[in-house]
Length: 436
Image (cartoon, rainbow, N blue to C red; front, side, top):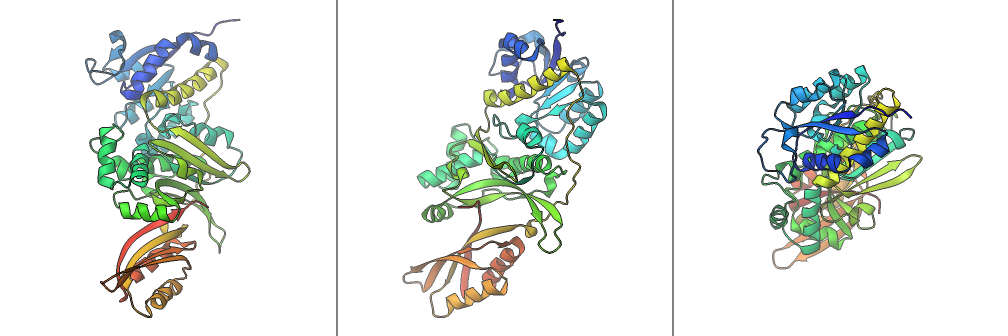
């Protein structure tokens, strides 16, 4: 048997994930060679500062600040720098030089994915990105390969570990958002500036990637409806708990059909929602991630595991690397992205969902009838009603659960309730997702 030459790998970035990738490549070289049929040669690691402290002791001779020179002559480039630039430019240079690319850069793929995939397809290169969504969870390859012959109808994902830790702590301990965030920061789950997580930006980038892949349609991140968890209160979480629900920040990607015309479109959105405790996503605790896929033929599928962490995410990177390296040994072009359906991306008002609405209203005869008329006028049906009388102030608290309705109709109903003379205030509104 003729032994295949060594496959030259350039690594861009040596942060928490990149350093672990380098360590595993150096420590597990023999085992990886047996799986691939060729030896992996780590030719260099591009970093901003060769003297910066790192979690893993790396051979100094591999470190360089010259990323552009490093990628020339590499067979595979692993990009773990993060950010849009210079990552975008370097990936394009790598592809144009004939290299395949492994990336974990969710922001870059959500923003410039179509450009990068088109560049790779033009030269027959492979661009793989399992580590961009869900950390160690294998979700990209199942959607791209295993389910390529199926029809994906819906994806519900908990794809941000920081927010899941915060909401889980609020649910289990009764903590406020501020206290739960402080704990997450202390334990290292939240950054010093947690905006990307609690504002829903990180989850929105991942939703754009999942929707594009699942529906074979380019879904730009700026078309993903985004709401973070900053407005979630301890009272909302407690109310949900009493009703048998838990609050989760969900990334939802859904294929929709117009009931009148039959025209199909896709929706991608991120927002906090109540999930019934019988749903598999309700059991996702701590900083873990999970993606629940509803496929026409395969049915419901659940992918669960660590959504972050250096060594955990490095596992996903190495999975991509091994798959690409095997193709080098066997020959053949890279697998192109299937984004040729190009379904329209629909606005949030077109989706169908349920609401849980908490209002403060006057405690007097005729109030419930007036409120019921507001719902009826907008074509929204009430499913559940819980009323608590506030002694001494002449007001009652109503928690109203709706049946499924168009988001636009539900939003109009909430606006009309806020304007109603019998309603003192609309205290909270939260969506309800996932079948019981």
